[in-house]
Image (cartoon, rainbow, N blue to C red; front, side):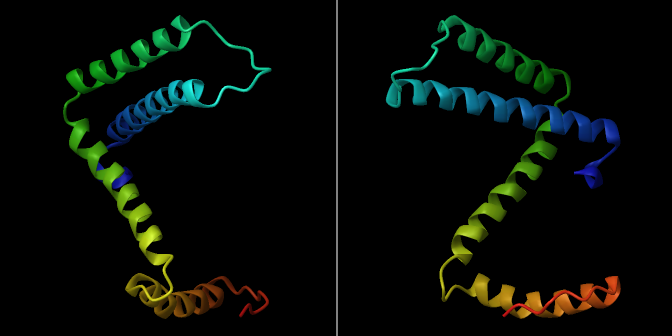
Length: 125
């Protein structure tokens, strides 16, 4: 993220991504409230999370309106995470090409890093 611009730009990207993730998390809590409600739970009035969602969306909109240069950078950062998740899911299959590439690259990288760091960990097979 730092390579995408200045430190201020990085902080703006972090802020917008953090607010968006909190917004999605609270929206998920609404779904959990509808589907999974245990008996002995303290329920807050519904206007508190709705007000929180309103404030989060206002913060996201204000950030996007006043700093539109953050949008492509935040999308790039988010897409790298999505690509990593997709590769992880694909790589879980036994005969996947991602897993084969990983196993070919992993051992030499471990040897180089052990030699560079002069570490003597026990070999794991």
